[in-house]
Image (cartoon, rainbow, N blue to C red; front, side):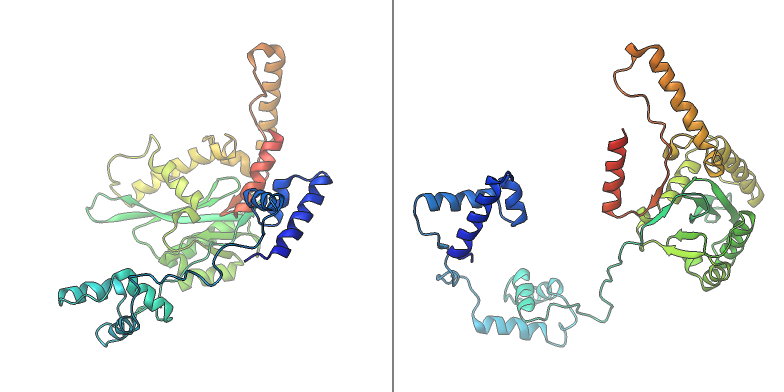
Length: 360
């Protein structure tokens, strides 16, 4: 309830602010009021009506005709606390009562009465659902700062069996920095891969963060111990949320939808390794990646992309200067992407969008 005195004070403050050049709707936003409400108060003041809130202060004086009696509410509580029902939610209790020819109240009423009596908690021996928070946002402003990795299956000639591709990607450059194929998923294979990848890329302690999902090979004690030994910081997605590991998921799609991907299952482990080796070479050195303004991951990783993008920008500007009539606006944006985000917060996304808009 808003008193008459408070309303009068609010109207005076808004009037003074507007007289000094402020916008009325901005004043209302600051006070968490709608413009419509303020106008109604002003009209009431002009009409010299009482500004007192006309709503019934003590609630409705009319008792709902279908309100449950005290005995009925007690019966619902007693029924829910019976030994055969104490571990069940109302969605399970009400149908069971119906099968016995008993109707007390609706399922929604059961929930409401339990809630009012503070008994609407997780009922049963199983653990209540656990809400997993979003993984910490990560940012890379150069190569070998944030890696993402995952495992995908490849079809094998033996029905029911698969080969497993372990693959590590640098999110800044999108370069595949490490990979291997095995006939099973195991933390020991993951450990060997990360050791070899760190050595081949000259990674020192506490320099790179490795993001992955929550699979067994990623959470295995052997693998986690290896990360600790190498000084690699682990980061994990939420369970069953593939969007938390988008770079690896996108890479697997590129791999399996490439024109050279075999349409028939691989005949051997060596055949699979041979094909992936050729794919990795093509992807790193020749593929023009859309996420990094269509330069190759290798050029991005080595820093050559700055020069390549600068040359493209100069070429387009010269083309516009030669034939300005062919251009209705600015030339294509060949801007260098200085930062790559993994699982960014909403504020980060807004900041990036605003920055792009300002530079466009």
